[in-house]
Image 1 (cartoon, rainbow, N blue to C red):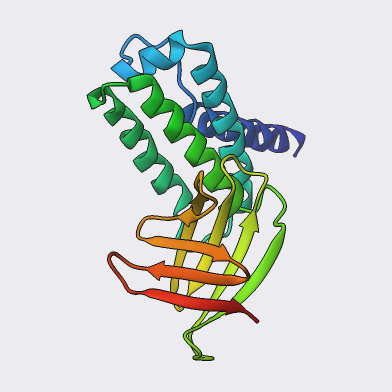
Image 2: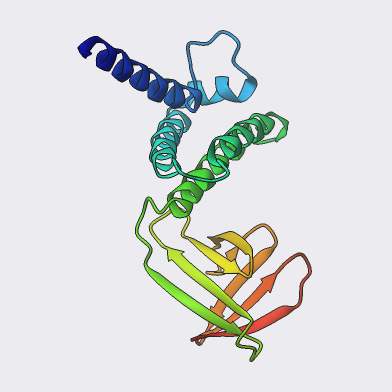
Amino acid sequence: MKLSLIVTMLLATAQLQAAAADNQINCQAKDQGTIDKLICSDPELLEQDQQLAEVYQQALAKAVNEKPPMLKTEQRGWVKGKAECWKQDDKRACAAELYTLRIAELQARYELVPMSKRLLLSCGNNPANEISVRYYPTTTPATLIADYGDQVSLMYQQADQTYVGRNEKLSEQNEVFTVQWGYEAPLQSCIAK
């Protein structure tokens, strides 16, 4: 009985270590790509890689019951996207930005940092047209997650204090929110309920 418990514990530990190793660069590997070589030679990028590995493990623990399981698939896509930095003129800046944004995304999406406030926005004088917004100011950069109907957008704070997602934008001035939801979609005026 004790032997089977020990074997089970060793297997679980090995699986966690393998998951961590899959998401951290192995600087000893001989078949490194261009970007991995750059990261291994740059202490700041290597530190970001370590931080992402830690944040990813925290997110993985929270995503255990995720249906469908998206985190591992998204992470593999992110790793492939990072490898594409070799095409950029400033490869280091590309990798650093990708690390920064991915860490902030995981911290907000999996609530690894505290949410500062939640708002419900009513848009266009239509009670059925509402957007739920959660703010995460301690991510770097600050982020928010907005839910609109059955769509969710992670947005990053910009220098002008607006938040921008893939095809979404949210700004606030004098307690009036301006929201653009979708590529070239019309602007909506919203107020907090």
